[in-house]
Length: 116
Image (cartoon, rainbow, N blue to C red; front, side, top):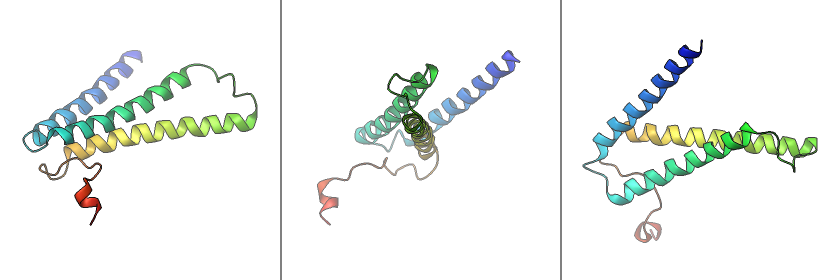
């Protein structure tokens, strides 16, 4: 059973890496340095959120979570970290793979676009 789990995890990781590679090759000629930095920052924030969730979920409840109401807030915060982290990362990778290749990664608009 353990071997099946490892094979499954490798297949999922391989699929994600293949999608990243395919998206990178599609966007490489068109994206500017700023687009790549925005994409990297988006993925980095999502990975940090998932890492905080995993580190916090691997141990017991923190010392400040003593009552039921605090525990419910802690659980809601943990779920939000996981949902936003995993959802944001999958959306960013999906955006990299599909769509028009010449379109830059969305981000903060410059001042000329904001004044319109």
